[in-house]
Amino acid sequence: MPLPFLTADRAFDASAEDIALPFDDHDSWRRPYRPGPWRVAAAATLLLLASYVLIAGMIIAFAGALPGAAACLGLALVVILCALRMLRVGAWVSRHGVRRVGFFITTTVPWNRVTAVRTVQQPVKWLGFPRTVQGQALIVVRLGGEAVPPLLTDSNADFLGRSEAFDRAADTIEAWDDEYRLS
Image: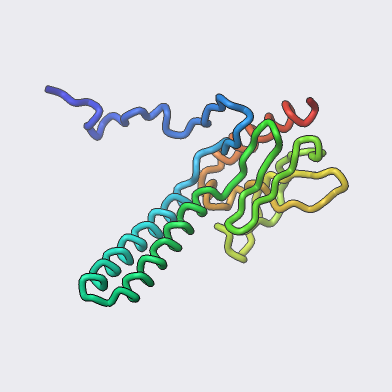
């Protein structure tokens, strides 16, 4: 019995690999792109670390040192929360505005306070590290000219090495801006 979806010569569901996510409910906050491989790999590594810490905590608990086991459990919970927060980082849009979710700070700008959303060439951080490289950034220009960190960059954990995905995400957010800023 042939099972073509398991063979190496044909990719299973290759057409759905890197398409934009659908938006059914425009009132809820949605990320208009998929999390990138660097972000997912970092979160998976943190979850793997948390599993080792939980196993160590279980071994410590069976040995009878409950305060040490509780410390391991607390550390594992912190690592799991960091991994989940890392997956939430990015740009989110809804009918209400555009939101830049950072690891510690979330900034929301309503569409009526946005002057423009555009892609610019500027120095951008490479994977969030202090090192900067020349790249593209999607920025929000607020009323009054208030500074907002870039929503997306082509060198962050979602788009490093995926310039087509960056262009598609930037175009999608600009389309949301065109639709809701003027209404």
